Amino acid sequence: MAEVLITLGIIGVVAAMTMPVLIGNYQRKALETSFKKSYSVISQAMLKLINDEGYVPKAANIDGYSGSMLIRKYFIGVIDCFNKSTGMSVNCVSSQDFSSWFDTFYKTYNKKTLAGSAHWWFDDGMFVAADGSFIFVDNSNTENLLIGVDTNGAKAPNLLGHDVFLFELDAETGALRGYDGSNNRDDETSKYCDKNSTSGLNGLSCSFEALKNPDEYFKNLP
Image (cartoon, rainbow, N blue to C red; front, side, top):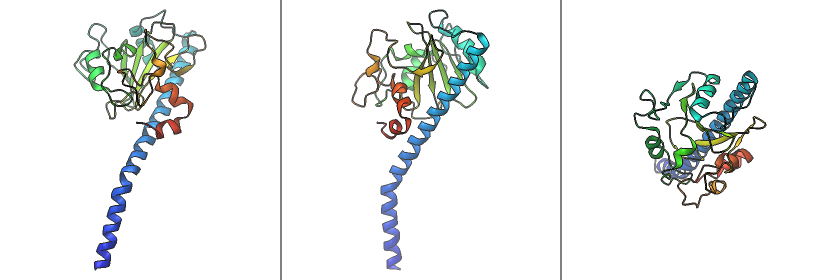
């Protein structure tokens, strides 16, 4: 009996040591899978939109809300979240205005409080797709339309660069690519995917990094 108890005790200690690692690995893999799926779904939607409409929607030619209305036609099971006058539809995920909701609901890549301007990159349109993901549209200050996604919607971790990513639709080619900071708003967004950054915008350019090598990227999340 003593031997059995000792064996069970050893098993318990080993399980206690390994379970957090296994759970962490599982969570990271789930985030990676969701990222790849969302990128594929958005890319396909944009390709169909361009083929159907005969042009690449450009931020310089439409405001973000119009872009959202146009884009959402190419997603299944859409719930519109955006009210042009107040920013957030009351029948969606929050009764707050969009900026208040976004800046309190999300945090940076390394889990810090977002800067008050963080919502600027997402705030011209929002809807919920059939899989529960949140899709955001922003008419940036250059030609490329910005499209953001929270790959698992209201579920945790709600962090930029973990389950929240920002892409840009190339105005010339129509390709969906990772946002690398070239659409800057007087900032240096290309630096914003850094575990050690104290910026409240840290995480805005993580899609650019994640697309390079998703497996390696998600293994090393902070």
